[in-house]
Amino acid sequence: MFPELRVLRHRLFETNFDVVPPPHPRHPKVHTRDSRKAHYGKTDEWADYVQVTGGGNCSVAAAREAMGIDWMTKKELNESIPPAYTRFIGFELMRHLIGGKFQGAA
Image 1 (tube, rainbow, N blue to C red):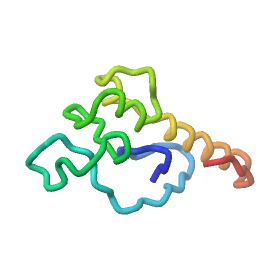
Image 2: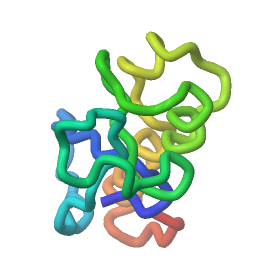
Image 3: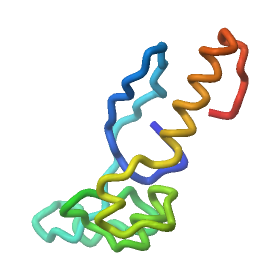
C-alpha cells in the first residue's frame, strides 16, 4: 500500500473529497518474537514488516524506521499516523483542488 513503509496499518481516510486508495498488495509475513508463530526465527525486524501496536513485536528503533518516524516513543508510535499517509492525503487534496491536474509524487 505504501512501499516506503514496513508496517501494515489499515486506516479509513475520512475527507470531504474523493480519495482513490493506493493498491493493496497481499500481506507479507510480519516479524514476530512469538515462538507460537510458524515463521518465528525466520524474520528480521530490520528487513521485514513489523507490527507497531500496543503489543508489538519489534524494538522501538525498528518501529521508528519502519514507520518513517524517528522522534516518538513506542507508546506514541502505537497511536501515530505515518507521515507517508499525511503526504498521500495532501497529494489527493491538491489533485482535488487543481481538478485532477496535480502530478506530485504520491
